[in-house]
Every structure is written in C-alpha cells, then in structure tokens.
Image (cartoon, rainbow, N blue to C red; front, side, top):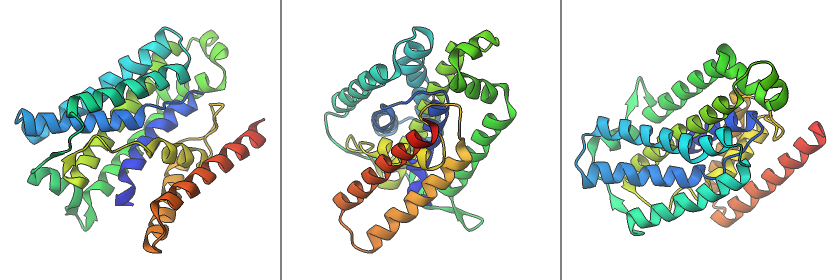
Length: 271
C-alpha cells in the first residue's frame, strides 16, 4: 500500500471531481509541478522542512482553485478543454522551472517521511489513512459533500435547490490540487529528488481506480470508499506483475485495458 500512496492521493482528489460530473487531466502535471516547487523551496531557498511542505500544499490548493476551479466553476468553461490546457501549461512550467534537470534532495526529514514507521506502520500509510478518513467525512457528513452529489446528479436541479454550483466546482478542483501537491511531496520523499519526469501516467491509474470503485463518469454516484478498494486492487496487481518480472510496458497495457473495460461497464450500467 505504501507504494500506492501517490496514486491514492490523486485518486481521492479525482473522486470528488468526478462526483460532480467533471474530470481533471492536469493532476499528473500538477503533481510534478508541486514536486519541483518543493525542491526549489528546500534545495534552492533553504526553507525549513515543515514550512516547505506547508507552502507546497498551499501552492497546489491555489493552482487547483485558480487554474481549473475558477475557469470551470465561475466562468463555466468546459472541464476537458480547461484541464487539457492546464495539463500542457503545467507540463511546460515543470520543464521551464526545472530546466529539465532532476534536483537531489538531501533531507533526513524528507527521507523519514517516506520510509520511517510509527507504531510499526509506515508513515505514508498513516497519511493515506488520514486523507481517506478526512475525505470520507467530507463526503458523508458535510454540506459540501451533499452539494458535490447534488451538482453531479443535476447541475440545474442543484442550482434551483440553492446550491452554489460555481463555488462547489471551484472547491473540488482546489481539493484535487491540494491532494496532487501532497502526492508530489510523497513522490519527492520516496525518490529523494524533485524530478520533472514523474506523474505522467498517474492520472490513468487514478481514473481506473475511481471507476473500478464505482464512481460514474456521469457524476453523482460513487465515493471514496470504492476508490480506496480500486487503488488497493491496482496496487496489488502492479506489485504482483512487478514481482513476476513483467515489463513496465505490459503493466501499462494491462492498466489501459482495465481502464477501457471499466469505462465500458460504466457506460452500460448508467446508460
């Protein structure tokens, strides 16, 4: 499960976006951009570890809110067009900011975040549990969660019921950006470096996990509980394939086939 921590964060954020009937293609690029931001703060500016983490998470939240949430929620632009644009934009910023070089991060605190244990359980697993419980609470026990399902069920009906649709959409893309930034922090910690090459495939695995967990592309159906099961399934599958010596390209092919199959099943089930 600890090897799936990055996928877990992105998939949980994507779940909220898909519950509103949207999608965010840019999360992998934002993950990489947040990782580069953390590297610049720690290696370039010498910002203390805790402050660097907080600033990186705030960066992801702000970029998700402004880059996608405002354009989709407030201006009403199509989510596929916007997130395709920000996918390209963030990817370009990653190369510009990093100059296409990987920056090594020699930080004992960052290494401890990735590999230390608490009560015999790896730190990333605790983070995954905390994020899951917080997301489950938001989904089931808050007005925000109710609004997310309402928007996904019918935007017009939600608006007529008094739901602030634009604000809800802005919030879900901001949340997805925050969790993508957290995934970027964990990714940096696991490899000990800020790399411009990470995150390129994570959105496909995240989409497969969310769909496997029962969340529909149409919105309004599913939740983070199913997503957790989907991530666990994919993580177990990938670990099994790796242990068996299956090449990376076959793992990508298998993940792609799974994604196509679950999209087809979603279409059949929900019309």
